[in-house]
Image (tube, rainbow, N blue to C red; front, side):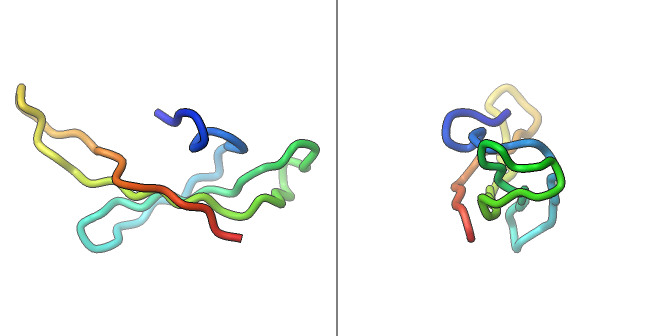
Length: 69
């Protein structure tokens, strides 16, 4: 679930890959007025790590995120 700054400019088109022990999510950032096929805000990258939950099972914790131009 995306929130706050992470959600700003999000309109899908996610790409997922493994980066070492992390799950990496990338998506284009849309600015107000951008066409659906022409985002101009760069790319947002999120890194997640798989952790064990206390009550059993696993979940992804977001470790960090950053924007690239």
